[in-house]
Length: 112
Length: 107
Image (cartoon, rainbow over all chains, first blue to last red; front, side):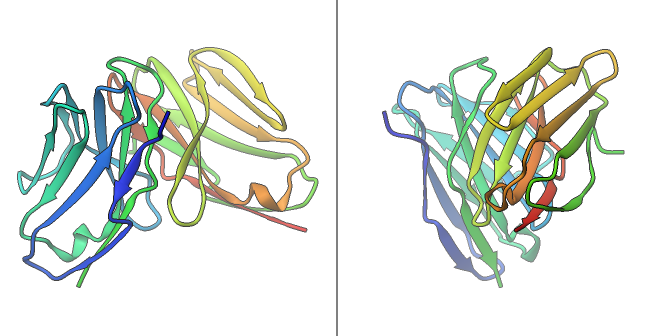
């Protein structure tokens, strides 16, 4: 059984660019949640995907979008990057309604 | 006011000391998680609680649903316990996180 993986581990972009982050969920998990963690802060919920549909969204603008694929892996896309988008982006997988989410190691995005 | 608040924000201890980290929440929840985050970002789930008390090795977590309060205790702390400890509540499908408690244990 493989755990949750994320790629890339680190990424540097400039303002205005677009970025795609990837997450492979743990085997058997059909739900993926994405979180943004700014330096020194707790993670903030971005959105959740269940069976390829968005299933809840936090207080993030539409330039944050996502996809989930038939194999339940997921992408987070951020358009028109801003300096404040610099953060650690975490994905977590679970089965629908399960109490426990399993976290990936995160992607650290730096926007210059 | 944050929906999930932790205290203290920072904690230093000498090896062997008993550690307590507190978490209060204001929303109705189905479960509360204690998570550990090491430098570099990886998050590990320590406990999931919906009532009572759980123990795993030197770690003990308690929750009082009526008072909307949970505590994480570390007995006989060790330098390898140094990390950020985060409390998160499940509401209902997403997790709402506290800002974390940074623990440093010195030998």
